[in-house]
Length: 345
Ligand SMILES: Nc1nc2c(ncn2[C@@H]2O[C@H](COP(=O)(O)OP(=O)(O)O)[C@@H](O)[C@H]2O)c(=O)[nH]1
Ligand SMILES: [Mg+2]
Image (cartoon, rainbow, N blue to C red):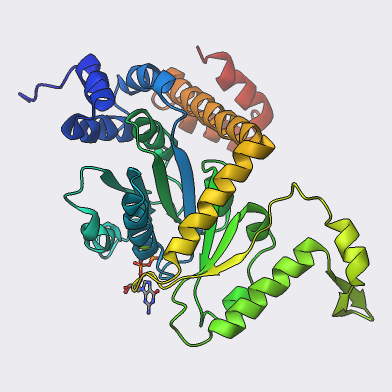
């Protein structure tokens, strides 16, 4: 409709040359999965691998967007450039938390060393949008030193962020009470740093104790055992616990306290993130994380492409016909699936 699209080559050159308008357009094109999106990403890919990617996840309202904003400002003070990707589930009532994020992150506007992109998950509950990894690729190619990805932690999403980021922050807030107790064990597996934000709020000590106890259990100095059906906390002799967690090369997950609105604890948090980055590089663990990231990316691309091909090769009413045939027991889902796959080119 009279819209002249910027050629892909121009966009790629623009992104690599630091043109913000071209960067924004490229991200839109990637996000909307336009036809030339893969070609653009393929051209940008050789220029990636520079950024350190920081995932920030946690329940809604824990102050993640505020924390990301303050953290980005802190990185700017240290002379580093920052790309931010904020992902929020779309709310059918307010049109999404995007508006709130934009307001929250307004403090970052006007700084050429920062680029903020808000994305909606379009229906799915929290988690990563399908194209989050691609947007990170674009920002990485654009040369940002740190890329911060904010996601709402809803079950599986927490695990997804860990395979996208180099360093994962899990954010809690005091006063969530039972919620802290209910944190799934999985969260400790993905957290490189635990953050209690809103440390100015009542209930800090209780939250801190709950998280530290979970960490102790993880470290092995405390064991939970079942005795006559009751869960009991048993302290191991310090020497035994020490010998079990003697491994000096292991990263120690700690709990950090922050007040994102006032800025306290932010410098220490930044230092801890940087310490994790240094540990990843020195220990060689960075290779493992990169392999995980790449395998995840590859799998997503293959799955999306297969999906597209299956849909494209299916006759318009094909699926309905097959479903009906299965309902009448003329065939079964297993044989029918084989048949559908045979048409995929
Ligand atoms: N008291 C206090 N409020 C905070 C703090 N950090 C964020 N908030 C407030 O908590 C609310 C939710 O923050 P937001 O960053 O949108 O949380 P998100 O949903 O996790 O992204 C906002 O009103 C913030 O101003 C903090 O450290 N202390
Ligand atoms: Mg938010």
